Length: 128
Length: 160
Image (cartoon, rainbow over all chains, first blue to last red; front, side, top):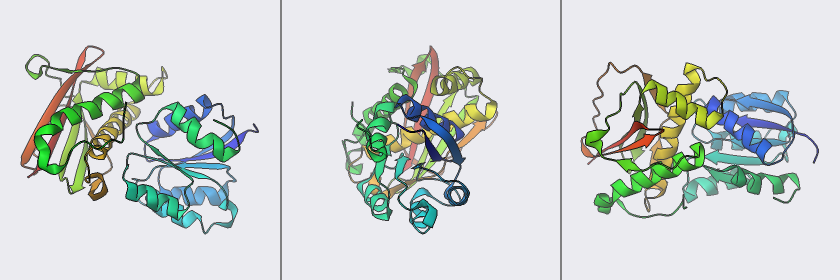
């Protein structure tokens, strides 16, 4: 698998590190990791950085993850980039909202590296 | 192990303590790789040097707190992040995320509640010289568990 550029969006720096570690444990080679602590920062990040994958929390200050997914759909350079939500919000309505807005995957916290592998690898064209 | 099974509704609050305990156990096992079990509260009172708290609003209205001593908070951060040296900021962040995941995991187990209950972002207090007065007078449940031999208190206070 080619190395990928990932954008990790979470207001917790600890969770951003855990998500990055989970990607590596899934066997995904990372060329670059861009971090953002809310949806607004993430929007700026995708405008300034080419990325191949976005992993995004929902409950964040300034701009939440659902709004980010809606907004990033308007960013030409980010079109087609798979977005996976990683969140404590487990309700069906959140899942439906996220997938309707354009997210391609949904992982509930707490999560295992295997769950990340299972959800992310197919989006990168690989079998989990 | 299940993280998305609904067990009870608001009308069965007497069933909630074991659901809270299960939510705590799952978070510690999945995120910290540690199996924890509740212990007798009277014998294991934590030194509350770190307190993480998260607000609940909507169909459940109240606050969930996770308290432990500073050394234990550091051990929790180390377990989450590996053996890298953890700053005080990372220790608080780690405990806040544990609190966040326990609250989310708990509400996701209550049938019909997760759809109508929102969580705040976590807040963490370091230092034990404070008093916490929640306006959420009503149901209160606390579970104490031992993490690497040290007590950690998880308390849920809900408005009636």
